[in-house]
Image (tube, rainbow, N blue to C red):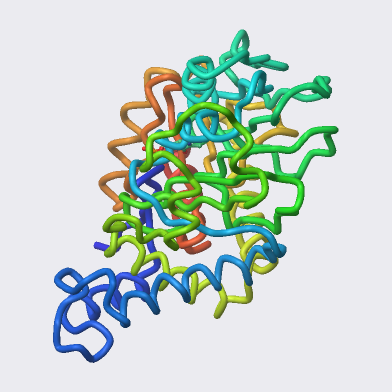
Length: 354
Ligand SMILES: *Cc1c(COP(=O)(O)O)cnc(C)c1O
């Protein structure tokens, strides 16, 4: 039975990307060795990391003066690396969900944190807006897509300070004006590669401004100086990331990915909005095109478990909602085909008519 993969992360990768990774596991770049067993400093692997970096620059139109790093430790390590390296006295954070909250917790270890807006009181069903950012902060931190609650900020704000953004779950879903950010980071396991690698896009002259001593591995400058090769980088996830980036370029880049993603999201939201049984959980103007959260209307609430079983029996995987929202979450990452969204919509109709 064909499976339709709606997992939130780790999540779907393109079949072409998986096949090319399998080939490289068998025989990498004609070396007769597996990508699993070669030196990260071999010329073949150095070429991989260089091409991946160049494709980041090309696909996201990253201006001069920035570097792209591939680091271990998950996006969660970035929650502490960002303030370690960039927070001198005070930073502004927007509390838009669970991940934003975790980033705030780490930043507080390094200085004053001004939480300029929060939607926590409403269980994060909308994205904070119309907030004022003080001009005396070192940066404003945003989580552009709230993977758990299904809200998203799909534009680059105009604020009087530099921005830092966690784009773990919506990178490569729209063009980004990188010049407004000092740093953009994310875990790769949502829209790029298997778990194990982070991407960090950093403005080089934003570094070196704090007085504190920074441990070598947690200092961005170390990795800028060594081209992500200070220590052994996560070789296999970086290889798969390269295959995904090549595929993104083939498809037509982020403008095209944005169209495809918006079409998929519209298809599912349309079905939810016109449904007798299902209802969305977030404010319409803030809803995410990557993670669609929905529940059963109160009168059908007890059928939620049945629908998950009904869907799973048809090969629809990973739609159970996160425990902090309940109901369902369908993640529509770049590698998910529109056909899978249509298949889910059909299953929702069939379930309603049953
Ligand atoms: C998944 C996720 C994280 C956490 O990533 P890890 O790699 O597990 O540390 C952080 N931020 C966002 C927005 C996420 O979706």
